[in-house]
Image (tube, rainbow, N blue to C red; front, top):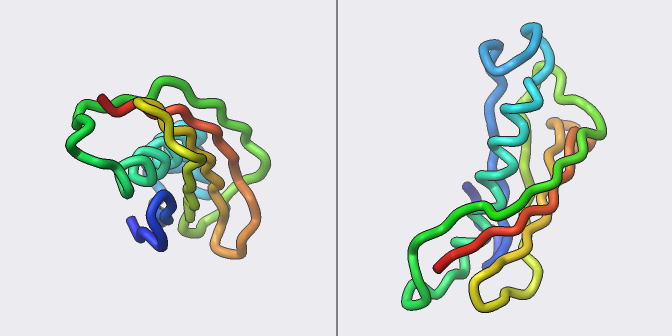
Length: 111
C-alpha cells in the first residue's frame, strides 16, 4: 500500500495467472478482494486509534466496467469525510495503462 496523503492510497496487485479466469484476465472475485482491501487501508490510514481498532466492511457496491489483461492491477482509494464510526470510501481499479476495470463504493466501520 502506498499512502500518498491521509485518507487515500494505492495498492498494486501484480499479475499472476492463478488469479485469472483463463490465464489472461483477473477474476472478478480477485478484483473485489483487492478493492475491498484498498478501501480498508485508506480508512485506516488516517484513523485515530483511540477511537477503536475493531473493523469490518459494512457494505460494498462494485461495478465492473472493463478488464485488466495480463497486467498489474492498480487500486486507487480515497475516503469522504469521516463519521463517528463509519468511513465512506471510493475505489477505482485500473490496468497499467489507466483503463478502469472496476469501481467500488465502500462503507467501512471502525469501533
